[in-house]
Length: 275
Image (cartoon, rainbow, N blue to C red; front, side, top):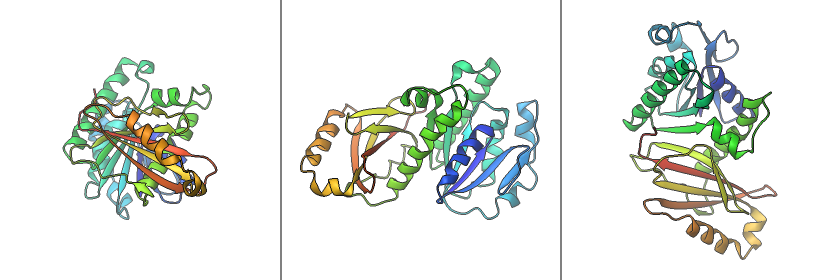
């Protein structure tokens, strides 16, 4: 899978994916250098990012093939270059990973930038320009992990987010022992992910999705436990039954792992634009 990151925050997330060999990473930022890096000028006006021609960007992406995820955090000036960058890879199956900042910490100007980028990308996803769009909230990750220190704050958040996203990708492309991570409905292009504590039957989402319509619970269980635990099937069925709600379709998938502990994740989808 290809990851294309635009902006400093997005590039930091892309860097956290380098621990996994499955990803080819392309980074675009101000004054950046290195392998698969594209440096852009720093502009004071967001309209300049929208109107800049981005020379040689086409050649930068010339070897890009296959499934591609575009990573963007919406409050930076450079986020206004999103559509210009995406235009160069639109022939590929594109997904968006959108990192929603803590709005309460943004200036009024940056709140306006974030609102525009957030809404435009959602409309593009709903119109099937993108395959799908994953929305993640920094504030929700903070809550899910019980907080993080000020120094290295976003590093702590990324250390929780990136492994979860990777494992959801991994399981979604693996054969389940029981159930499956089914393909979403054509209209369910907006989604988020979360953590499932299997022992406590607790879930902690990375974004509070409005009007979810489908939820898939992913169980990663030690292979030996799958062979010997006679109560596990009933436990999973009971947990799934406890989560049923009106207008919400529930599914689950169980996978074998070589971990000494259980791991669980959630995919939650909706057809509705998030305000």
